[in-house]
Image (spheres, rainbow, N blue to C red):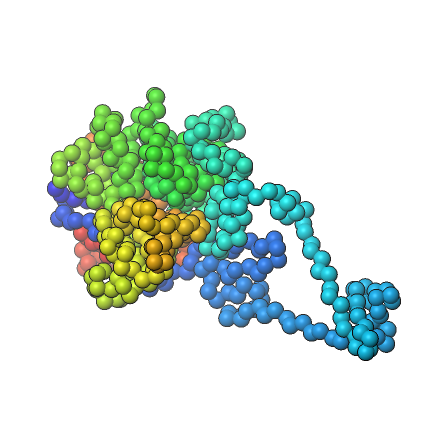
Length: 569
């Protein structure tokens, strides 16, 4: 098995980039994909800041996500808190003109009634507190609680500022919220029903989220503007299986603007933003995904993307390898006609290497996970900002040595059975257990579904698993990928990954026959550096151009690439 690095087939200067046309592919030494998630101090400012809406009942707004220096009370300095004012109780004076007894009418517009005891002591009578209800509140709370209503109310009360808006929307749908999308008959405004989403009526809300994401994905928008006239993906039929978020929607619409036809499913049953999926369906994209799919739903959605009469995909964009393996196993003739595969995850790339080693990879594949820009930003900042900063700078120990003392267990190996039932039995009370690997194989969750253990749903994606002696653990996202199931990720960072994916698709689709063989390739360094250059204007960054003498001294082309093919970090 060998890992290949190829020069781009598409001239980047055609996209107004500073690149030269490169030579043919160069082989490099094979390497096994990594399984860890790196973390380091993050110099980037948080790019996604969501503020939870103020409570309709007058409660205080929680602090803004990503802005630790901001207080919830507007105008207060960091660290300050809004302190409730103390109220004083005055003794009523029966002779004061502003205070009269019960038979003396009101006082100053506010009833301050007093009681006079036989010894002449005056005390204030108990006040009647009047409740103010808005019309919509009164209507909502007067309804007889139903299962759906209780869940909607609980979700809205517990929603934090770090939740995406989709979480609230997903749990406050119409009365048929429990109906599976597979059982619904939905059409978009154009009359098409070639999609399956939670609720097509959420499209307008999802469109607003996509428009916000566009503002923080400058490279994709620049690529869309520069290349849409040439349509470098005209004729491409891309089937994709990734997390369906607002950032993915910007990528999909960019691919469409460049000439591609796309059909999409989700790579995770909990990470789909329902309103974004609805917005894509409304725009004409065949999308088959919703938050909270069952395992059967998951594979059904993938099959609906692939198995459609009169439509043969010729490109695959995958995250985790499930789509690739589904086509490979169930539709082998279709798989042989695929022109290229682009894979972005450690898990998916590892599975491609396994196919290649076994001699079963009959199409060229591009490993964008190991591109420098993707590694430095997505794998570093994106994963680190959306989970605890606890993977760097700590001593290395075996799980068995510390399992009784730890408060949080986070798996991120890409392997299976990393946390077993034995570990779970030995954990301390209230230990938090979660997974940052792509698949749900790292924590043995299946072993917890036994009669002696009690499962208690705390809120969406948060469960208590309770032992007979009262001990409990807190399990997040049922052991599935944590960050996109329970939180959000920085849009600007994902812009880098999405741009890398788009360029890899363009490269594989336009490559002349024979340039790429049936193997796994790294993204050409020239394209890697081009992705980085497209993001520099956002920081108002300016690079010094090498002089001819400097370029000659270093043995480099003035326009790059500036790093050797084997360079990753």
